[in-house]
Amino acid sequence: MHTMFDIQPEDTALATPFLTELVHKYQALQEDGTALRRRDAAYALGVSEAELIDAQADELCRIRLDDRFGEQIETFHRLGYLMTLTRNDAAVHERKGSYPKAKINGPMGLVISKERKIDLRIIVGRWRFGFAVAEPVKNGVRYSLQFFDGQGNAVQKIFLQPESDADAYFALVSEFRADDQTAPLALEEAPAAEPRTADADVDAAALAAEWDEITDVHQFMGMLKRHGVSRQQAFRLAGFERAQPFDPAGVTALLEQAAAGGVPIMCFVGNRGNIQIHSGAISRVKTMGPWLNVLDPEFNLHLQMDKVSAAWVVRKPSKDGTITSIELYLENGDTAAQFFGVRTREEDPAWRELAESMLDPERACA
Image 1 (cartoon, rainbow, N blue to C red):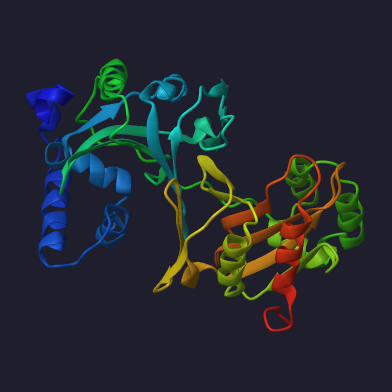
Image 2 (cartoon, rainbow, N blue to C red):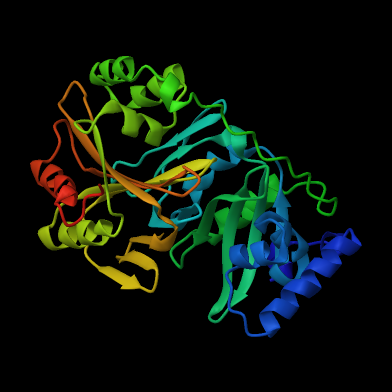
């Protein structure tokens, strides 16, 4: 594994006592029988996931990548068939397919395939750290590329599959290998929350009027900024004809009925650095503990429902008619996941009926 990764002796020398201690703490956590994913283990140890991966330079055989993230993303299409993963605190979105050629425009990136398998909206300007990782697993070695924001939170991970082009992967690692493999990561302070206008100070009538003038759903964010409100604040103030809350437990029925009825959906899961989208039918929906899962061959969704504090049916106008979404939120107001109907122009009536069914009296919130 080290030979294939071309790791130099100095690459695996831990730079600080902090990193050495962190590795020992992580190993102790694993040895006490606590089965935690690396992200959760990092939280348990009071560090970021990026710091934990960085500390495991030798054990994981990780290599730091440089900060030419736009250029790196533009080479991902060479990897062939792969799995890309995007997550936040409540949702994990995994999609298999071939990464199409990306379009990078300054701090933003767009990835769209004709087959709609790998579909991403990338905020490249928020990417700070990247690693190539070769991790021992039960059946051999799992190779991946893992990228993090300034606070060390994962924004996107790409995992090679048996069909992937391993030579292209190693060429990418060689091309973008960072010169400095040992200095401590320069983590950044979390950005301050955007100021919001108090409900009492919002002109709700003006907000509702502007909402009704939207001709494209992408205009929605601009409307929120002009009124100084959050998404859920706008939902509360704009009126029930535009947005209505319902019990998040109803999302289980939403996905089960979409699968049973063959209703194709779009599922958006994002974080500060990336939004990942699935478009198409789903088939296998299964609940395991707090997790609501879609477990299809090329698309997996994992929703930790005990972290979803609010769910809404939202209706936005467009030049092609009303666009209906199901939107899930965390306690802190961050978006957990969004669902839409797959459409070419007008919305699928079957999707709209399914989304509106979440407002049945047994599901709707007071």
